[in-house]
Length: 327
Image 1 (tube, rainbow, N blue to C red):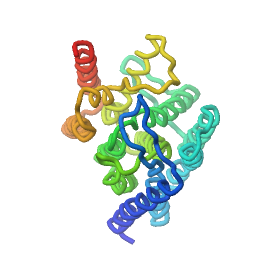
Image 2: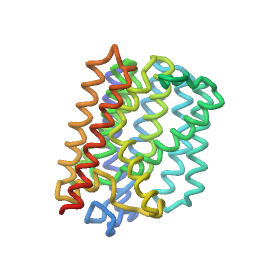
Image 3: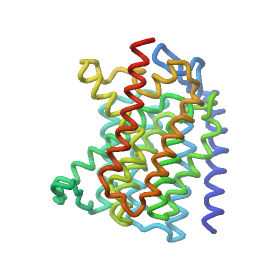
C-alpha cells in the first residue's frame, strides 16, 4: 500500500467515523450543553475525537507495518492509548481530575521511555544536557501540552486547525509521513467541526492532538535535528495563549480549575467575530509563522526568530485586552 493510499484511507476513516460517532452521541444524549461560559448556544454532540483517534492509530500501525517509522516511535505514540481511554470515559461521564492526571502521566512516562534520550537544550548562555533534568522537564511539557490543547478547544475548528498546521510545519524539517497521517486524521474530522460545528472533538480529540504534537516534536528534535525554537514558534499561538492566560488568572487569584472565557480566541469571539473568522485569523498567524520558519530554514537556531514570534503573540493579547477595557 502506497503512502498516498494510506493517507486517503485515514482521511476517509476519520470523515465517515465522525458521522457515525455523531449519530451515536445524539442517540445516547452525549451532548455538550451550553452554559454562560460556553462559546456555543445549542446542545452539540461531543466525542468526535474518537474518529480522529481510530483513524490516527490505523495510519500509525500501517506505517509501522510498511516500515516507514521505527519501533520506538511507534511505541511512543502508542503510549497515548492510556490518554485516549481515560479521555473517552471523561467525554461520556466526568472523571476526577486526579484520575485524568494519572493516565496522562502514564502516557507521558511511556512515551519518554520509548524515546529513550533527549538532546541537550542550548540556552545560548548555557546548556542543559543532564537527562535527570531533561526528562522531568519534558514530562511536565507533555502534561502541559495535553492540557493546554484541551483548554483551547473552545470554538469550532480551533484545535483541529492546530492539529493540521503544526504537523505540516514539522514536515518541512523531517519529511516524515507520520506527520501527514496526523494531518489526514484531523482533516477528515474538520468539515464536521467547522462553524457551525455538528460535533465537538471532546477531550479524546484535543488531548490526543496535544500529546501527538509534543511527542512528534520531541522525536524529530532528536532524529531530524529540528530546533526547539522551530517547535516553539510553530505551536506558539496555542501555548502562548494558554500559558499567559493561566499566569494572569493566577495573579488575579482566580480559581484555576474553574471554567472561563478569558483566552484571546474567546475574547475575539465575545467581541462579535464568528468562530469561522476567528479561526481564519489563527490560520493567517500560523501561515506567517510557517512561512518565516521556512524562509529561515537554514538559520532556525536564531533566538530572534522566537522573540519576533512572541512579540506577535503579545501584540494580539495586548490588543484584545485593550479592546475589552474600552468597550
